[in-house]
Image (cartoon, rainbow, N blue to C red):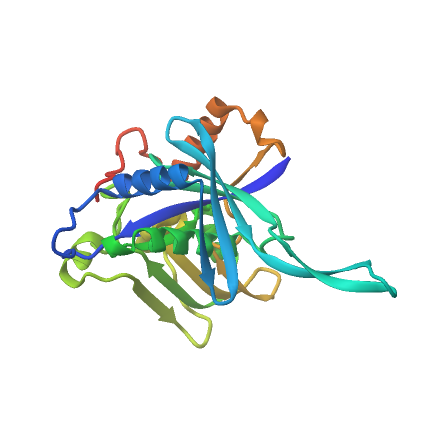
Length: 290
């Protein structure tokens, strides 16, 4: 079995597009990009001197699709020569799988450290891929981990000291009115057109007070994939640690042979991940056109 970490993919656009460009919903942007990739079968791009290759594999079920992300590497291997062994350069393309549910805007990324040091690195390449493919639409793509907000509050409540808390909030997108916040994020975005909204709180004596009743809605939103949080604290064991939503991501296990994936079970697993932290998921539906 292989482990897959869960992320939310967010796409944002400026209010004004180039003349002649028709505005598409975020779901349409994802669907159109996937359709183009499925027709071409593979797309590559360079980051620095490193080449990355995206392959469309197949539709698993509904709006859930399977992809490969490969990284081109050069290795030197000993080969037989006329007067002894010789080192020859070979090009290899180690790869991982990732899965996108367009409807839920959930991305599952395979954890394979022999290819990417961590799934966050792979998530950055996936975001770059969508930005490259949608550059004419001036799209900014972001992938953020999905975690349980309870993990954050457990650490905060047990911490001996809290020195700082940094919150990076993505533009309103898939969530619409799905989650509440003491800050009207949508109104702030309409006023400023921000691509990242940051809040930084600090107390050099470690006496920062993070009351759950004041921050619960905002942490819930970030933990569900709408941004990132970083807390600098001293835990219950007296250790100075950094608490982020990059740790303890929601994850699932899938068969090594992806032909054995049970599509219906995968759909249920993704629905469960999508509803992480959302006690009212049956009453409040996401607005995919936000």
